[in-house]
Structures are given as structure tokens and as C-alpha cells.
Image (cartoon, rainbow, N blue to C red; front, side, top):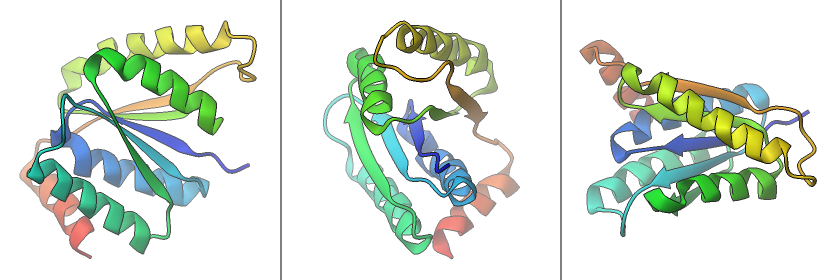
Length: 149
């Protein structure tokens, strides 16, 4: 069974890291990647450049990738809508700091409960993974070089 992935990016500083993780998972699962980027207003030129790198790498890897932007106050409803419209249960959340893991997991559990309580949701659970960005310089160089290959 092909499993698509929803990549949730809570800030633009994790675009390349989250994209790296999602593309690796999509290659293994054979699915598409739907990126949900939390941001207020239009993307800056720097964010646009990072998203272009991600899109280009997805094309190189022959992975279909779609990008959706959401404002902070609408992030939860945007995620619920995306999961239902794309009929997928896999969520990957890229974060900046390890300290955020517990809070993000609680947020995802809340979303899971909302979905399970909806009569049109056919699944009994979500599959999610919260991945903190590595802070060591070597890993960061490896991620950068991944997008340059």
C-alpha cells in the first residue's frame, strides 16, 4: 500500500531538514509528499529559494511534492483538512529543538482524537514522527550537500 506523507514545517529554518527526511521516507514508501508550511504572510525570498531547492530535489528523485502554506491560527484545521483530502495517516513534523518534541506529540495526539471521532475518518490511528534538526556542523553540511547532488 502506497503511503503519502504530510510534512509539517513549523518554521522556515527546518525546510531543508524536513524535506530531506520526508523525501527519504517517500522513496521508501513510494508515496507523495504534501508540505504544510506554517507562516504568516507571503514567503520571503529566502523561504522561496529553500522551497525551490526542495521542489527541485523532489523532481530529481521523481517524488511528487505539493506545498501548502498556512497561518499559525489555521495550522491545525489545515492539517486536518489535508489529511482527510489526501486520505493519508503519515505525518512527519520537522522541528528546530528537541525540547519541542513532547509538545508537538501532544498536539498530534489531539489531532488524532479529532479525526478518530469524525464518522468519515476510516483509520484508527495516525502514524507520526517528530524529527528535531541536528545541530552539529557535519550533519548540516550533509543536508546542504544532499540538495546540491
